[in-house]
Length: 254
Image (cartoon, rainbow, N blue to C red; front, top):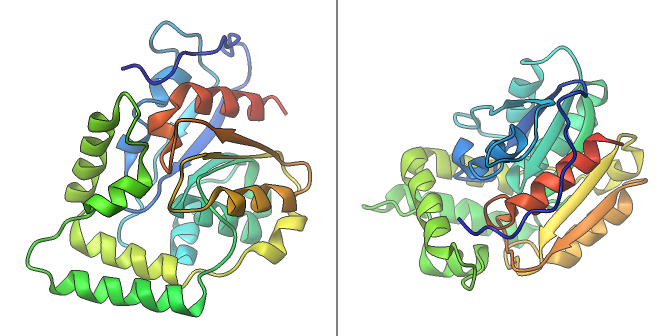
C-alpha cells in the first residue's frame, strides 16, 4: 500500500495505555480502520503501544442515542473516542450525556448540525426505497465519487473495502442507520461546553460533508485543533492513515 509517506512517531510504549473506541460511519465496521490499527500497534516497522483498541458493533440500533447508550454501558473508566461520520454523531452524543466517560475525542469527516427537514425526509424516503429494492447495493457510482478521491493510488482497493463492508452489513443495517442519522439531534449548542482535548480532521475532497461544515465544528469547540487533509475525501482513515495516526498520537499527548 502506498497510503502516503509516514512522518516520524516517537515510541509510545512507555506511556500509559489508552482505551480507544473506534466508531465507524454508516455501512462500515472494523475494516474501516484496517490501515490504521497496525500503525498504532507498532506494525510496519513503526513504534507503537499505548492503546487498547475497541470496535463496538454498530448494528441493530435505530437511533444515535441507542448507539451511545450501548457504548456507555461497555466502559466504567474514561475512554478516547474516535468518531468518523456517523460515528462522530455518536461521539458527540456520548460527550453530551456522559462527559465523564470521555478523556479525548478525535472527530473525522463529520459535522455537528442536524438534518434539515428536506434532508431528513430524503433519508427516510431512501430507507423506504432500499427496503423495496430487489438487489441491495450499499454504494452506487455517484456515492463512491463523492466519498473517495478517484486519483488516490489505492482507489480501487478502497472501493473494494467499502463494497465489502456494505455487502456484509446489508440492507437492514443500512436502512436503520439512515433513519438514525436522519433523526439525530443538532449538537451545535453543546459544542462550547466540551471541555476535553479534541481534534477535528477531514479530507479536502470530501463531497459528502462539506469541509466548511467541519471547520465550523472545530471552531465551536474550545481549544480544539483541526486539520485538513489533501488527497483525501470522506474516508481519511483509509486514504491517509499515517496522517490519521499522527493526529491521534498528538491528541493523546494533550
